[in-house]
Length: 464
Picture (cartoon, helix red, strand yellow):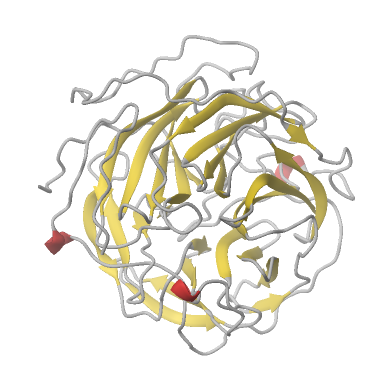
C-alpha cells in the first residue's frame, strides 16, 4: 500500500486519519462473474429532448450527483450572474482554526475556451417539467426549461466537493462557492486506492477503493464528522472506479483492474439495502460490460444507464432499465471523438450529456464532449468544450448553481465553466491546483461527487 503524500494545499483545514480498525478496503472494478439479470425492457426511439440526473436509493436523487441534505437551506437571496462579483460570505461554520492560509494557487485563466456545441442540441423541445430539481443552468439565474432549489430564483451558493485520490490513499473534502476557489475542510485516509465517492439519498457517504477485495467504505455525516459506518464486502465487487444509485439499489461496475482497458467479459453488481441498511447482492448485469468499464451514470427520467469504456474501446454503453431492474442494451455511443471517456453528467437544463474525455498520459485529453439526448436517452454528438487548463479530465459535475466543475488527473487541477442562456460555456475561474499529481493518468485525483451546502472544518472525528 502506498504511503500518503505530504500535502501542501491552499486552505488546508484538517487531516482526519482514521485508525486501521475502523477502515475497510475497496470499491473498484474488475474480474467477477455472476448471473445476468439483463433481459427485457423497452427499446430506444428518438423523441423530445429529455433531462436527467442521478438516481438514488429509496428515492431518486435528482441532479448531477448532487445530494441536498434535508437540513440544508438555500444560502442566497438570488442567483449570481457571471458578470457580477458580489461579496460572498465564505466564513467557516466551525471555530476550528485554519492550519494553512496560503494564497490562490490558480495558474492563470485561459481566454481561448472553445465551445463547439451545435445550436440545435436536440431533435425536439426540452420539457421543462422534467428538468433536474435543485440545479440551475447558469449563474445568471438559468434559462428556459431550468429549475432550481426554490423555483423562484434561489439557488444554493455553497457546495461540498468530495474528491477521491488513488495516489495518496485518501479522499478530500472542499467547500466551494461561485466566487471562490475550493477550501479544504478535511482529508480522510483510507487503506487503499480511493476512487468513487457517492452520497446516497439518505445522506450516507459510500467510498470506493480500487482493490481486488471489493470493499466499499461507509460514512455518516459527510458534511460534518465523517463518522465511519462500517463497510460492504463479499458481494462480488472488484476494482470498480465508480458507482451509481439506480432507484433503491447501488450499482457497481467491475473492471479488469491493473490490467487496464481490456475487452474480457466483466459485470455490474446490483446491491440492495434492507431496512437496517445491510447491503446484499441481488443480481448482475453482464451484457456489453467488459474490463474497460470506467464511469457510470443513471438518468432516471428516461431510465437510461450509461457506462463509459476506456481506450482502445472508446465507447459509452447505453441501457434501458425497467422498473423491475431488468436491463436492455440500446445503441452504444462511439462518436464525437471519444478517447478514454470517464465520468459523465447530464446538464441541469436537461437534454444534454457531458463526458470527460480523458485521453491517455502520452496524449492527454483536453476536452469535455457534449451529446444531445432525446427523450429515450439516445445520444448524438453535440460539440465539445476545451481550454481553461483541461488536462486528462476524469471527473465532471455541475454545481447546484449551474457551474460545471472538472477535475484534471493530468495536472491535479480543477477547471470551472459557466453557461449563458444559449448554454455556451465560458471559463469562470482560473484552474485551481489541488495538489501535486502523484502519477498522472495512473494514480491521483479524478472521480468526485457534490453535496449542496457547506461542510465544517474537521480537526478530529474520533480518529487519531
